[in-house]
Image: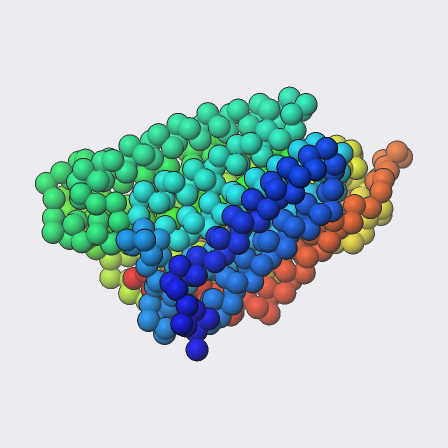
Length: 506
């Protein structure tokens, strides 16, 4: 029996509903007593809401909701939303990251005002991301993307007395507004060609052929540009280092993990469902072949991100460029799709999804460690991390797990997700993409190991003091580390589940 048997179909959107209601509840709590700073109640409410939404999504996923074995995807509201295995899989990523960020923010916000607003914005952004995963129409894609983006702009600029935070929020907002305009214009061009915004209907219209090949190509290119911004892919990556460096570290963790995954889930669905490669390549002599576009983006993004990260002296900025490099790895999931790929297409796309799942734990944990260092007011350069392991060995051990997992070293979760991704790319005939990815992973070990070397090998400075032990941050960091390590024995089920739900798109 499936979890939704004998219930209304709208119950399938329960994870998004729980997140939205939790955000409203946080505003209500803050409204009742706006002058008090009941940080524990606010952080606990936000964490429980995120965990409840994630638990529901996991229950649905295990029960086969929206999957082929139980009757296929659940379409709602005139096919504007769809609940299937992929949307539930990504909801687990969004809610896990939101829960970890909420727990860590308990300490980070201890001396800050507007705590209720902060947690509410995190939950509303997570709601938008969850709806992005469910979107089956370009209209709902745009609306849910804005629902995720607008709270994010405010979160980046949350430190109102910090000039860097305000500047980062302004830059993020201006570039985001421009990308939204480009994305909306691309949607209008696709609508002009196909007469529909629902993804399967767009594909059906294109299958009948069109003479407006140039208009369609420009529309697809502009839509791809909108997704490239959301995922911080080259050449729309310029906002990421500035936003991540200036934002509060928990917000940087949220944006670089959950927001990036949200951009990818929409891109995966839109390009595989609305613009099937076999259909668009038969139009205009293959002039709308988006696979080649994403292959180019993947190579440039992972290479630029890793080389830029290797030149940084600021650890937070290094992780920002590192996240750009990981966007390049995830792009392989789209770049390695072929017309006659069959099951191989589902394998490579699923491997990319599994990598984003693992990345959500290890990257969030790394940024939360930086949040802890910021709380101790130690500084942001590699030298400022010298000897931290002598004062905080548990946190340093967790950071070591994150660094080596991000680099793709065994026996951590990042190794198996990268291995599955590169192996699937080779199976699809894109061995050169896998080779570029492997070389970039080897390069990344240089700058990730600098953090480990500073913490464990370098001599601490004479005035190294770490202050109080922030319980919330410790809990979130250890949870992320345990998740990263447990994904070692759990990597096979995660990868198989991701590949199963991805195969349903084809």
